[in-house]
Amino acid sequence: MTHSIGAKRISESLSGIGIYNDLSVSFDKEKGHRMGLFVPGWNGRYMKGESRDLLGFWRVISATYSKPLEKWTVNLKAVEIKDNKQIKKFLIEIGLPLLRNWLESERPETWYNGHRHLQIGLNENLTEYCVWETHNDRTVEKKIEKNNCA
Image (cartoon, rainbow, N blue to C red; front, top):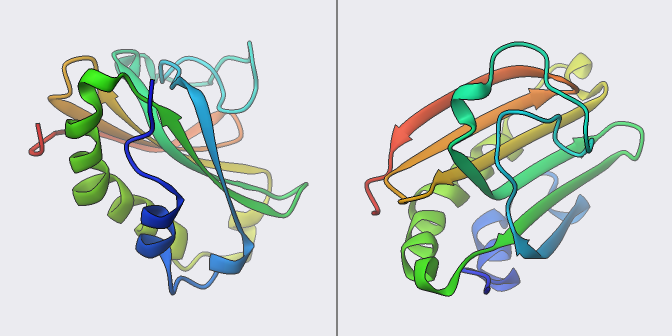
C-alpha cells in the first residue's frame, strides 16, 4: 500500500483557501472503506435514505467539518501500488479540485451545525468516481461520473 500524493501536493492545491490555516491533514495506512452504507466517522451506524448505489466505490480522499470539535480535516487513504499511478492522476486532475471547491464554498451559518463530510471515491476498476456529501446521517448530495483519467 502507498499514498498517491503527499502533504506537499495537498498543501499546494489547497493553498489560498480561507480555512487553510485551520486544516488538519491525515494519511491512513489502509485502503478506504466502501461508501454508501455507514455514516462517515460512525462505525456501525447506518445512513438514512438511499445511498446503496455507492457500495461499489471505495473512499480515496475526504474532507470533514466537525462543529463539536470546530475542526476541518482532510484524510487521504492508502491505495494498492498497482493502482497508484492512475489514482494520482485522478486526484490531481479531479479529486483535489473537487475537494478545494467544497472547502472554499460560501455557506450560511446553519451549515456548520453537526458533522459535514465530503467523500470522493473510485470504483474497483477505476472507471467511475463518486462524490458524496453528508450531514450527520443524511445524504446532502451525491453524484457518479465517468473517470476520464482512467
